[in-house]
Length: 246
Ligand SMILES: [Zn+2]
Image (cartoon, rainbow, N blue to C red):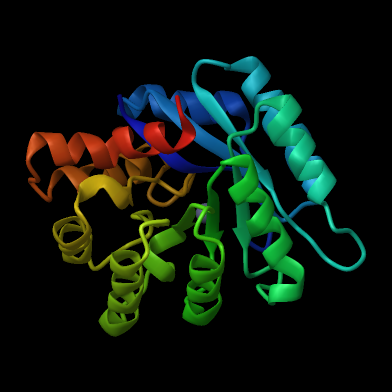
């Protein structure tokens, strides 16, 4: 089973681009993806729950919802996250350092809750290594998926290496291969960590060159690594299926 672990109902771009559940499933069908994790960002936690729930209600067998965590002193959102996971069937939590501080007094209660609820946090940390290391150390029970191996479209090998090393040292750290352009780092991570903690994601939809080609390119990127079939299938779906217990 092929599972895209990272798909946006609403993006973090300046326009806050939105995609319907239908549009996402159409791409999945065209490329051969069985299931996709979906979430919205650049919105409130409440609206992210509403958007993902509506999408999953339309395609319950294809889409898997994550709740977007946007905690602050204004709104702690822990009760909303708890309710989404415990009562509405949400399977994970999305966090983005572009919109939410990773300062421990704001984000740590969310990570702690994720550990208690047994759901992973997909975190785009914008290359900020230290907070991810702190969370991984402090909350061993929490499963942390580091988006893009640390930073989107990162060309700095030494930074990617730090995140791979962190995952080597902490078995609660997973690496999301979307937006990784130094592709041999994906193979290196699979070699060093074992394939069990490298996870395929598209981070789409994206219009360049078009949504279907973009998704296919991300999938081909993993296939072109020519891993042994068992490792490839773990990365393309098995690992996230285990994490999400699906
Ligand atoms: Zn993303």
